[in-house]
Amino acid sequence: MNDMLRRNFAEVHPGLTPKEAMEESNRCLYCYDAPCIKSCPTGIDIPSFIKKISTGNLKGSARVIMDANPVGATCSRVCPTEQLCEGACVLNGASQPIRIGLLQRYATDAAMKTGDTLFAAGPRNGRKAAVVGSGPAGLSAARELARFGYAVTVYEAKEKPGGLDTYGIVSFRLPQDIPMWEADQLSKMGVAIRTGVRVGTDVHAEKLLADYDAVVLAAGMGRVPALGIEGEQLDGVYDAIELIESTKADAFGGGLQGARVIVIGAGNTAIDAATCSVRLGADNVKIVYRRTRGEMTAYDFEYRFAKEEGVEFRWLTAPKRIVGNESGKVTHLECVRMTLSEETGKDGRPIPVPVAGSEFLMEADAVIKAIGQKRLLPLIEAFGLEHERGVVTIDPVTYRTSHPKVYAAGDVVFGQGNGEATVVSAAQQGKLAAYSVHRHFGGISAETA
Image 1: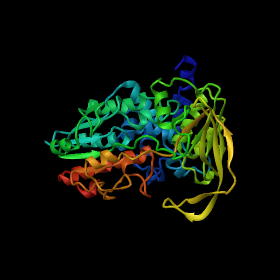
Image 2 (image 1 turned 120 degrees about the horizontal axis):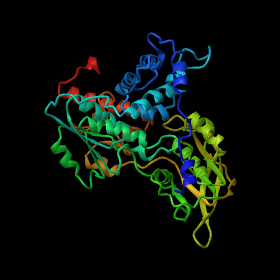
Image 3 (image 1 turned 90 degrees about the vertical axis):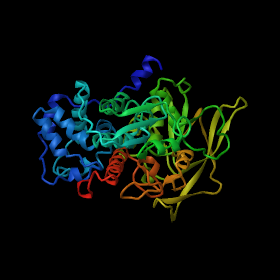
Image 4 (image 1 turned 30 degrees about the vertical axis):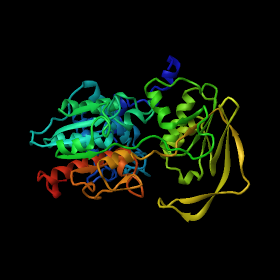
């Protein structure tokens, strides 16, 4: 990636200045029984961390945040705060809600600069736990288990820890040094993070089950699945996850300068792929989606950002065929108009149906698939876990799977109407899975977790 493109991928939104942070923190009413706490999936004591900012105790503020949310620095940048904590702020309507996300970023950024270790591992209890995956759910589970005194080893298939946060979220929203710092906090606590190790290939599931007292499966999901249409093999068809990952590693070889790009899908990954394409030099970027804006799964702030970046949206439009030239290069995407039926799917959204005879062509030099991710069936089956089309079956309270030694959290349990696909929800699930492990061994009561 050249210097110009590297600048394009620099973080978009600046943090608060010390003066701005002080003024904003002093706006907080420090509510008793604060609704913002209840709206945070990890239950951060928001008035407490903001009060500490107002008194200049930034390390104490960061400790409050990270105590509740082991990936609190990441969440300060990627959480849908306007729908969660800020959406619940009592100042809504009267003035403007407290900018909780930016204050959280201010405190955690300060902790990163000092290099302090915020937490220590608990006295060893003689038990060992393995965590498969080092995304938000995995890091959260590992951190809590280490605090309970377990000897924890995290197995990560990639070369760097952090999972989705490191590889799947664009750099201009989340620089890689943020999840790296969160992982480093665990390493300083004595958690062993083994990167470049693929469970099921480099180390067998049976060995983990034999060597550890408990296993937390937090491996996320895989690549984008096939569209199942003609032309997917053409040059110029990209997997959104691979595209984003390549920009994080400075490995994208180009090919989008001046291009007409079409992104298929309307989730957060689709938005990231579209805005990545803009920053990689595309002249025109469109998102096509078979439903309407009302059904899209991307956050509202993501949609607004994409519009600001010049991304166009084509609603009620579904891909039918990718068309190429004699050289095997993409030239068009054939689409069909859709309409929404009165029937709804499992997710409660109306089912789109094609309009007969409405096919049309859209010019394209590149087509990016962003229609979700594949389930890690070989890994799930290696542990012998019950699942429904790749969604691991768990006890909704304990996060225990069908195997008595295995617990699961994060994207491996998301789907079929279960949970939310957010970083903060995954972090909370990882915590709860760790609590359940410890409770199983008699170390924690239901009343304290």
